[in-house]
Image (cartoon, rainbow, N blue to C red; front, side, top):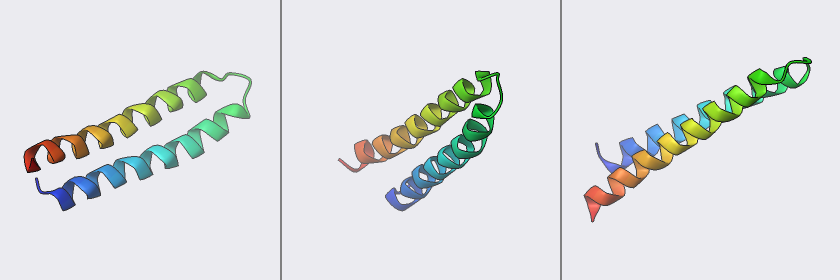
Length: 63
């Protein structure tokens, strides 16, 4: 995987993380049960970490 592909994957993961958190996180705050909000936070953090790891792996290959 080259650097451009890694950037694309990382940006896509970040975009999906923001979109799902915006939709599911906001919708869950309107209900009395906030469990979905916490799950959405976890998915957001996980996708952000995946994007960061992908970029980190490519940076290591370039060095």
